[in-house]
Image 1 (cartoon, protein in one colour):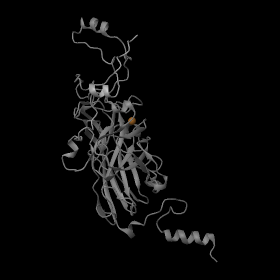
Image 2 (cartoon, helix red, strand yellow; image 1 turned 135 degrees about the vertical axis):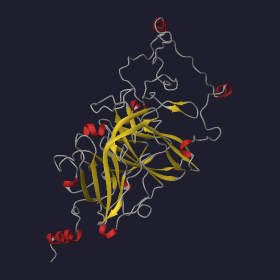
Image 3 (cartoon, helix red, strand yellow; image 1 turned 90 degrees about the vertical axis):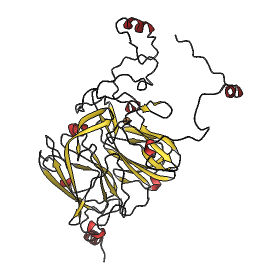
Image 4 (cartoon, protein in one colour; image 1 turned 180 degrees about the vertical axis):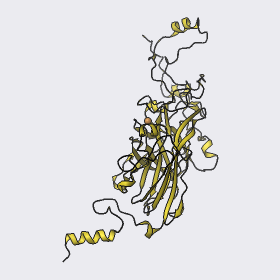
Length: 434
Ligand SMILES: [Cu+2]
């Protein structure tokens, strides 16, 4: 007679090296020895992590071997804003690690920082001793030491890697990266697959070292450690199925990331894929600290579409927050008096703060204007955690650096007098200010 216990024993014997089988709802993958290491082009289409790319690997004894080097890196957030950060293999974020479900990985980590570090594989289900938590699951990797992590990737998903030693300092300085495990048998194929790590920094204008003690007032908000206009545009051909994988390893802030011109579905988290039956349409996805969110959509609407954090202070660069509120204040008298001392003085902010970047106000050395960059019509009044999705009928090497050319009659313009008259619109004069 087959008993319940007998079935369980048989089941666990058949599972072989895979320990987690019974209560998991996620399907377990075949062991690496059975399927062989997943290969780019054959088993997966590589992810794009602009501008850092993916970490190279080599095969050794059936495992994919990677080498991460934690080190100080010279970094540029955007033209005109350079900093000394910490990263992996010369960049922040570090290069993306890409694997396939079932792969065995051996990841060497060399620490070239002045203090200990570890690497935690955020979201990856693995043996406790490979989890990378200093003091709890391993000793810290001392300066100059190289540690070895080795595990089998049981589940597909969008994961991350980061230190769990002095993480407040180490992540504030840029130590983080994406870790993507492609499914062995994909249910959806996408044409473009992007990865963007969201983070936040405090960089006092004129300085070059991010401040790890910051707990609020982050003033440089980034995608892959770049602030607009330093971010890379995302390009898609009209009709492409696009996946964007967002990770958030900022210190304190969740980011509602909004896409213009399209709606999308949440297709995965750092817990794995979301079943098709559990998805619903959105145009904004909240990416909480310490999580990943994958979105998928058909890029069927040509144009230059903003893709940005909807927290208004997160699309500013190096915004100071200690300003008095001058909106609506009559500053004429103040300006006249100050100009006796400073002839070119002009109070800012009383008519709103738009266009401050376009005015070409002088900024301290090594800092950014608070917003934006020149656009095809005028100055783009957003910066920080902002990039542009460029959807085109034809995609080539010029697409990323070119502006959309709009079909005639599809751009909002100043209203013509005869149109106002036809539609019975009388523009109202501004009300008298009290
Ligand atoms: Cu944000």
